[in-house]
Image (cartoon, rainbow, N blue to C red; front, top):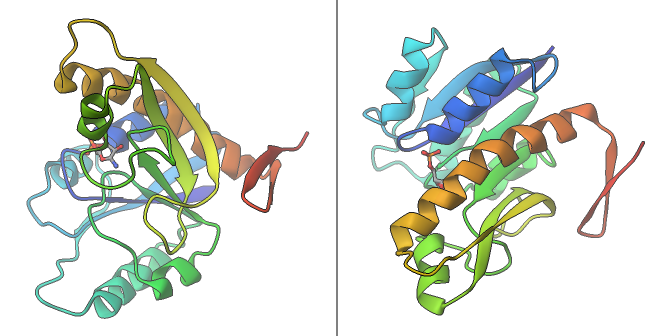
Length: 201
Ligand code: GRF
């Protein structure tokens, strides 16, 4: 059984899509071992509890990033987490965290990276005037929204759209993409060459 650890800071719709995929068997032999948030009042944490999952708030409370991250790492290890999935986790990971789970942390970002990293990616893309945008699931390294790309899904920007409409269209694709990427990674049937994800049969 593959143990997943989810980190979130907000509403948790990607977490819920992953939980649904696990229940439906679309992520074979996986279970969500723990859901962690840096914010005690994150709606995603309550949603996790309602599903009967272990949900833990680990607040930063003015602590140093490395120290806060160390507590998260210890919690993930205590739950024997194999793969960490950032799902709207609004903090940069410290190098110690990234090293503790090297090649075993995923993130989802609402743009076609390397375009529009950082906050409000959907609005950045819309304001720039792109006609195609989307989402990216990637491995996490020490730089923001940067590691090797596992999977991308594109969406069109249509006449009459505003940034909210584009964000909603991207989110639908995020909910499909994340579970598929997790299943790919857990299958182990890939290699990373330089920064390219190459499927292996
Ligand atoms: C998503 O748009 C995700 O791509 C970004 O943060 C948002 C989280 O949304 N990293 P949710 O909490 O999963 O609904």
